[in-house]
Image 1 (cartoon, rainbow, N blue to C red):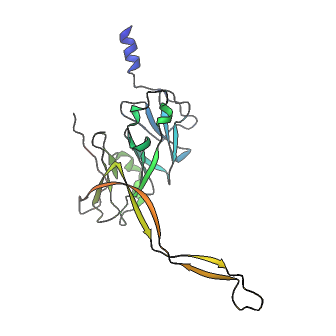
Image 2: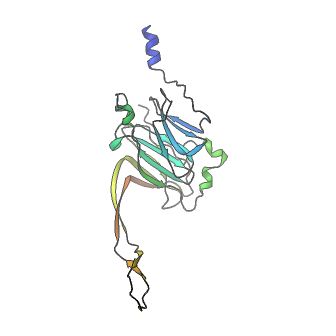
Image 3: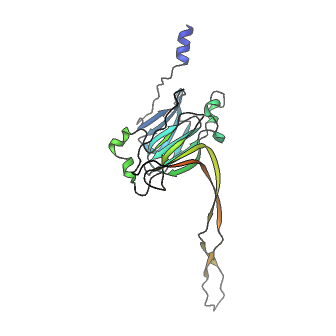
Length: 242
């Protein structure tokens, strides 16, 4: 009947076979069928599936180290790796809302995770070993958090700079382009083709002192907070409950 059809269409329980080794971590995007999975055989790779049809992953995101935790919204994915870094991705082109495009025939093409920035969140006084301690698995909100409210997207995390109790608040949907000037001179060997009887080496050391300029993308920093005089390892962003 109509009620049965409605219940089936609204059913958010999915059977996802992850052969042959299962998953060490999984997260389902709220009220969608988008599933993120970390597998034991490839702990450095983050897989994205459509839970309604999980025969093949929609995307695979290779990262710098084993993935500890992933949080995602319709616009942003943030993954924490055991080397103390948070990797920020936009889920669709231009940081748009992914689910607005997933229902059409081009839904698979709508998912285009794009790496934006990697944040080093561990203070020099901290140790990355704290990320791999056995009890730490229960600290779901540890080291960073991503707000679930799409209208007010916030990313809060530990800060590499400042004190060990400093945290930073970002808007991960806003990307700024920053020009970084490398003032370190680069060197290279240049052949000078010395003739017969010359005392000069056939390879002279050439010093290039011209600074180079590189453009990098940065998510927008909103605030830096000295939250505590001791190291901060757990943080959560509350919801308005509306």
